[in-house]
Every structure is written in C-alpha cells, then in structure tokens.
Image 1: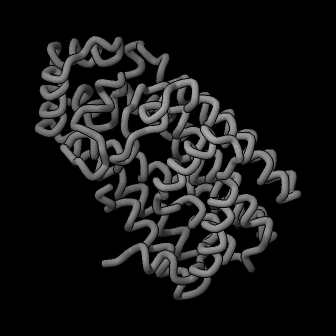
Image 2: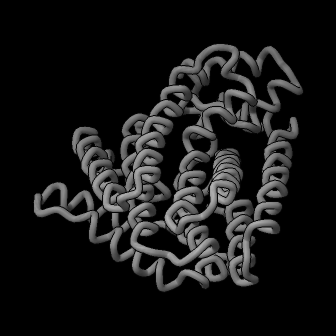
Length: 325
C-alpha cells in the first residue's frame, strides 16, 4: 500500500507550499554556508513531522500562516539537531548519505547547525503565537537534555526500560508531540483537543524511535546504518535491554557494560545482536509498538473528523509502524 500518497492527499497543496518555504529558508549568500545548506536540502526527507502538523491543523480548522511558521520552526529545529547529533555521535552518514561533518568538518557542521537553529527561532517568531514560540524553546531544551541523558547514563540503571523510554521521549517523541500540538494550537483548537493531539504525537514518536532502533539489529544499506551501530555509539536500545532483564547472562551483562563505556568491538556487538534476537527482544519491541498503536488509534477514532483525514492519520500511523527506512 502506498501510505505516503494517502497521508499527503488531504494536504497536498499545503505541503507543497511548506516545502517551498522550507527550501527558501535554507539559503545564504556566504559561499561555504550556501554549499552546506544545499547539501542538506538535497537530503530532503519525507517531511513526516511537518505533515503531522498540517494534518492536525486541517483536522481542527483551516491551515494558515501560523500553521506554516510553526511547522517551519519545528522542522528547522529538527534539522539543526540532526546536524549537531552527527557531530556528537561522530557519524559519517545520515540515512545513507554523507553527514555534514563528514563532508565538511565538525566546526562547519556545528556552526551550520547553529545557523539553522537561529532560522528556526526566526520562523517560529513569525507565528506571533506565544504558546507556539514557548513550546519550541522548551523543545530545544528537551532535545538537548535527552542527548545528555543518553550520553552520560553509564550506570547499571542505564540498562533499564524506564530510562530508555525517558530518553526516547525527550529525544524523539517530544518533537512529534510538539508537531501535532502546534498544528492544533495554530487553528484555535480547544485545550482538550490540543492535549489529545499532543498525546497522539507522543505515541507516534515513541513508535517511530522503537522502529528505528529495531533497524539496528539488521543490515540495511538503504538507511545507512550498519548492524549494531547504536551499540558501537554506546547506546542500549529496547531489544537488548529486554534480553538483559529477562534472560540474564553475566557474559552479556559484561558486554553491555562495554557498550556503555565505549570499549565494545564489532565482533562483540554481533554477539549482543544475536542474543537480543534469540531472547525475544525484537518481538518484545514490536509488541510495544502495537500497544502504542492501539492507543494512537483511539485518538483517530475519537478526534479525527472526516473520512479522508481518518484514512490519512491511519496511514500515517501504519507507515511509522511498518516503515523499512
């Protein structure tokens, strides 16, 4: 099924307007910065976050300039955070293409990320909606604190499901939550509708990250993420956390600690990957996605108003749950 076509159908014109605005915001007359921004524009992406903002706004009213500026601010903040994250993680690829820090250098990447972040703030200020502006500012803090929590969590407590969900809520789900929340705010939805939209976005964001983490247990050139890359970067994700808690082996705990202190090698990661699979970690993570999907579907049933939008929201949820890249 072509989920993306179904998702975009109710907002096709507005999404085209958004993409034009977004690309025009990533420009500069300075030669090096212009080159880097062109590199980022070419990466494109599916625009799943602004799509969620637009769909939510459409559900509660008519998409307007405030909606677009809110969506712009969020997508630019997300883009800046990816550029910075690649520097922090020393990543050479982003979704199968060279990262900014790999194509240029860390200094250029950090400064470009700063430029994009400032552009995000400039755009969201144009919404002239203090609730949206404050929300983006708080989101920037949340994303940074999530990254720090993940980086500095080396204790035994770090091998826990609660900490895992705390990290992904801060690093990923909070962004989706703000996207749907701001879409509702931008068209004057009620407080109850805004809160329900935020909860839906949180569910979607958690599903998105769990799915992304599952990719790490399988080879895929399409996503530019070799097997076990998260563990090589010091990250323990849900499948291996489940395995360590339900099928505890001292040898595996020792390897997990090596992940946390950054001394693991590729062969040892391969052992952990296989251990997570045979211990039911992948299935457990998929079951968690199903639980979250059921909660998200209740929002669609109760709050989404037209048949076309119900179909789009449902396709959005299915795409996030079932995507292969």
